[in-house]
Image (cartoon, rainbow over all chains, first blue to last red; front, top):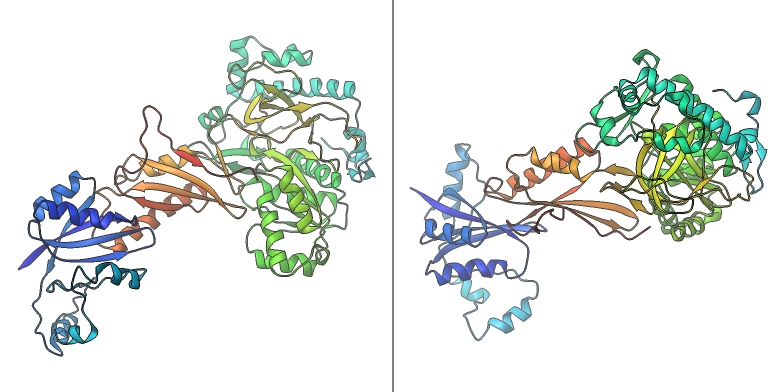
Length: 137
Length: 449
């Protein structure tokens, strides 16, 4: 019932996250979900991948510091109050949550420094969703 | 060691004052004779009371009375910081503990500090030497000294404090930091003299300007700045910024602290208190004494210290000496500003730091990889020190909180040893430079102040 999460330590240097994604992509390992957390000088990226053991070995060999841990992956009903029900059950029992993130979508939010430039770069290569399209998901 | 018949302030020829005029203007020949007499007494004290020196002198077949002229000094053994470390804590003291009235300490090269002991007479002498220092800058009874040197084990704070009281000043023991309060007290109390590190003096000058204070708004006339190297360019900036004469002072805790040498208002090198310290310059490699004027390592022998006589102590400071007459009328030799060190000691905001101290802390933390780098830089006029460590799998856990706790814990452990704040930077594995042979552990990006 628990799933394996792979965590990677990254210095905040440009291109470092892309290197991780490239390594996994070349090895045909699919990223099912991820989240990033950052401080001023470093960050950690959390990954749910199709082959965690091989992914960890690959990253380790490429000089990354990695860590395995267990998390729960909860299917939440896609309706108002769906997430609240799960949170309430844990809160009522005093089980605290360190962090949570969503992995169920192919739709990923990017926070970038120059959002207009990012739109220019990506608009004709990938699908960028509008507010309306997100609401209709 | 009392100078009472001599204790009267008289003007020197540079706008300052003599605290002990007869001694400070002793003709060179008489000064030399006094040095030899005191050297023999110091050697006798060391030989009779410090087993380390008895053994060394016996091995070399030297007796205290063998010292007839200055050239004989070259026969004496050197003393190093390692020797002091090997006799931690009180093994170099020449008096029983119940005659030691105070102990200060400086950084050791490793975890143990280097203690310095004083008898009551040592404290009195120290007070006279600081009184000379302050008087040379024109400070007299009735002046108010804002003493912004750190108080505590560091000799700067209490050293200046007791000397200023001996001179008859009003002392404000404000210690370092809290710039807002420094400026307020400086104005409200009417400080006429300031003592602190040169970098902090410059910081205060900038802070005053930022608050719209002009030099004429501050009653300070003179500043005494030591404990870290600085240049004449910085002197000019401090003088313009605070509207003062900024004077360099020199000392090291092993010699008892500040009061070893000081500038008069001619600002042409620091007068060594040669009646209490015998100075030599030696080649740091061969340890052979160098002729006057050449740059080499400064070596001191104490001539009056009862609690802790030190023979030919290697300061590791590189400088030159001059015995040219000075316009102020003092007859003592002067040392130029030190231009560097013959070891890897860093001076961070006036605090002596040995890279080995940081290494020792890091190596005591099992999760840390044996690769690190110390990066010293300056923000404005203040030194900052970063310690880079690699995040291996032993350190890395799951959350940012774990990493931040780890960073803070390393910082706290280094603070416990060095008493200064460092910033620990977490780096990816194998990103800290490795080199063949001796790794480059310290990168000092500071330019001369």
